[in-house]
Image (cartoon, rainbow, N blue to C red; front, side, top):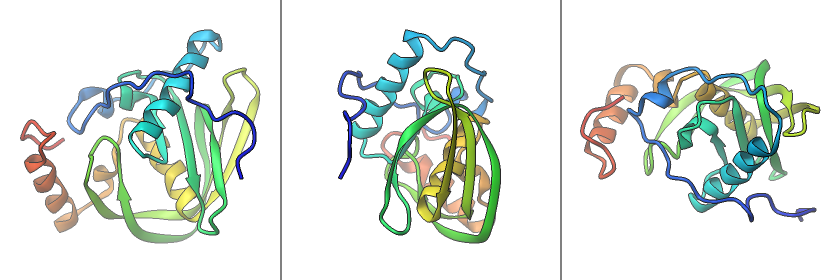
Length: 183
C-alpha cells in the first residue's frame, strides 16, 4: 500500500514528445533553481506519466530539456518504487545483462528486446535539494537506466542493433503518431 499523498494530483498533463523530436536527442541541462517552478514540473511529470500509463518519465519527453525524471515502477519482487530524481547520475550498473521487452512513452505502442543490467544505482537530488540515492533491481533497474538515457539525449532504440533496430524503426515510421521518418 502506498503512503502519503499521490504525486501529480495537482499537476497538469503535458503533451508527450515523440521519437524524432530534437529535444529527445540532445543532452539535458543541469537544474540550478530548486524553487517552485521545479516542484511544479515534477508534479506535471507525475500527472503526465500516470495519464499515459507509464512507469517513468523524463522531463525532455515533455519538451523540458532539464535533468529530472519521475518513476512509479515495480521491481521483479513486485515492490513498488515511486519518486523523482533531479540531476541524476547513473553511478552503478551491475549484475547480469538481460535482454527484456522495453517500451517508451515517446514510442507509444512499440517495444523491443533491449539489453540492460539488472542492477542500477542513481544519485541526485530531490526538488528541495536534498541528496538522494536510488537503488533498483530487475525491471526497476531497467527503468532507472532508461530514464537516465533520456536525459543524456538517448532513447532505447539507440541501444538496438541489427534486425531489432531496423524492425523497430520500420514500425515507428508506420505508426499513426509518426511523421514517417524514424529517429
